[in-house]
Length: 238
Length: 239
Image (cartoon, rainbow over all chains, first blue to last red):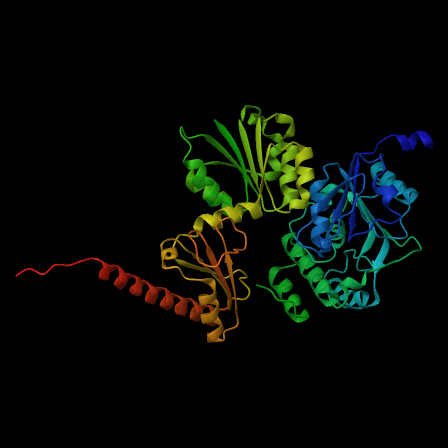
């Protein structure tokens, strides 16, 4: 296996962080990825020093925006976005997932849930509304994931959310008949930091808004139907 | 001369005004994601392309300058890498977050313009002598106001800072007043000098009242000064 590791993949890796890079330091600075970044989305008084390039995202504390900037930074065909404060991610897991996607088995691979109980509660309430209208599509079980790897064309989207960008990518992939999506939990969970407490409802609502806008743009549902769902859920529309 | 402009709608007007002054008029190619920019380009007669098409424009070999002023740093970096291979001799980029300077430098930008510095330079030019200028710094809270005053001729009156402080404290308003010298540092002298700035911030009604009272003070002192000068001039009566 050693000679395989030395060879480089057609993939770029981005670690999202609020200020710390724990176990993941070795994964993010690994030379098997030709493009390595750390996107910092906390308050800018902290500074982190690592081998790979650090990008400071504006405005702070918006994970969806940070993920979107990550997709803009990387130019390789495969993109891996990981939570750099995770305790579950290992180098072997990331390598395995990237190899599977390069081999063409899946187009998006999502694993290791990154949740809190409050966030799950709100997420399930709003995910139900989407699945009632669009029963054939795939939506992940948890509100966000620590490891998101996929082909870049599914991440090139105009829509924005406050918390999760992976749901939009999974949703677009599920509308495409050729794409295969894999969602699993690798027997491990990450907890959301206490900074984000009491914003759960906002995050879930923005997720609903993003997915429904996407569905309207892709013509999976009609415009009026989308507006009706959003107004029932209590989401403001311009 | 051929110029590549990567623009978001916020910076369109200012850049086009500056480019219009260049003579002979250069050839311009505009790259953007915004629909408003596309409509404006049709109006002005510039060539327009989408950001996603940049890599496939082969004429870029012949271009002399590229100015990148998109809405986000990540977008600017993405365009930068796309045009890296074409070897454009001068590249200027707008930077929103000063912590990202290292990435811009390592990607090979020749000139970096920081948004904050740019704003500061514009503001300081805006402050005309002997006039009050007020702005609302936070658009969400229209009641909070900041008023600037730049002293020029009225420095002759010899008004001390203590006079102004006393007047403002008598009024009993919720405001914050500060004095700066012409270099932008907090002034240490006793008397208003030429080039000094007076800055008053607070709620709108309070700031307006303070400005009105200060104007009254200045005018009164001007009258006194004028009468003094007129007494010194000797007049002769004929007849």
